[in-house]
Length: 127
Image 1 (tube, helix red, strand yellow):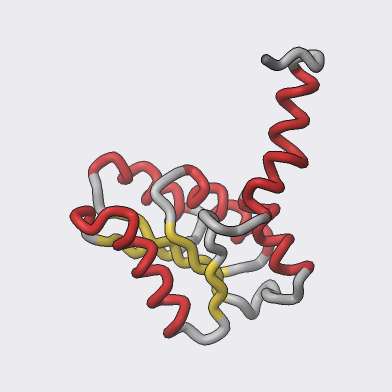
Image 2 (image 1 turned 30 degrees about the vertical axis):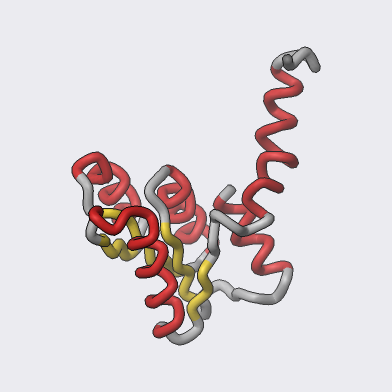
C-alpha cells in the first residue's frame, strides 16, 4: 500500500524524492509501511497518530525508520489526527498529504498485489 501510494503520486508528478515532505494520518500499520517506504525512496515523512498506549510500538517503529511523529489527543478520534495532518500539510512547504483513506492507489495495491497473492495461494478457490 505504502509503495503504491508513493509511486502513484510520483507517476502523477505530484511528488519528488528529496524535495517533497510526505504527510499522513494513520492509526495503523500503513504508517509503519509508509515510514519504511519513504525512507527507502528518499522522502521525509510526518506521521500523525493518536496518543494512545496501544500506539507506542507503531510510534517507535515509525521513528526508527526516520519519520517525524506528531501525536494527537485521542479524545478527538480519527478526526483529530486527520485534521492535524491536513494542518501540517497546508503549512509545510512542498508537503504532500497521501490521504490513505481516499487515495485510489490504496485499494489498487490490493487489487494488483494482495488480491492476486490470495487468489494464487488458494488455487483460485476463494469463497
